[in-house]
Length: 253
Image 1 (cartoon, rainbow, N blue to C red):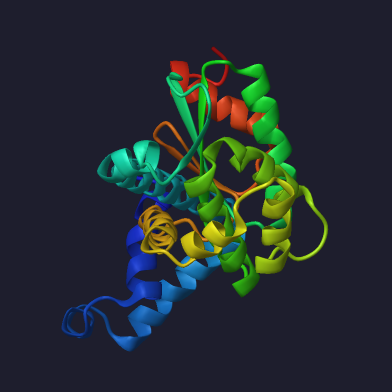
Image 2: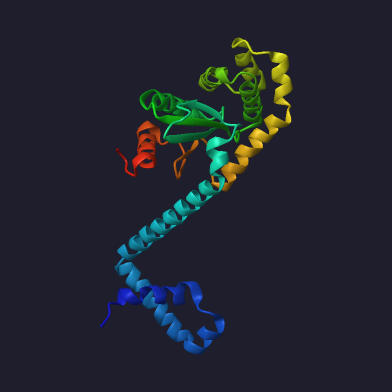
């Protein structure tokens, strides 16, 4: 006789989820339905490992679905993600793997992730890095991002210095703080103010938000590495594994 475990999903569906009203009324009496629910409950109490197996399978399916969604979104938006002129390109511009980071200047995890990015660029000469402003935390974050875009528009060669000083600095990042960093780097402040309010600055941030929404990013830092979306600060070794997977299909090439 087949194991009761084989019938458990059907019984769960009937007792916990409920069959269609008409079919249930025609098939089971109230007492029969109560008996089925009691059998399922007793079985689960006696064999709780079944719930662990079910949750593990659910997690596996959800992860697979999320991965497929991310891959589809990356394929759909690939040119904008990896090659938009509104992104800041660092490292090897002709690199074999592109590492895209979405960040917020007021994100504490982004401050620590900046060291990971610098380490990766230093240790991996074949890595292309793209930075995208994603100001999700506060109005100050939006203001800092607007200044950052204006810095990129005026002096892209100074963007990394600006980025490190602002993201690595103390206190709240906002317009005043960001402008002070830009001034220290010798930028044209009148032009910077003009560029901050330009359609290009607005379009850059809107483009980044749209990409993030399409890929289900809800926090910073978030990354796109090859066909993978990575959400959260996973550490430099975790990022290296993702880069290797994009490069050669395994965690270590």
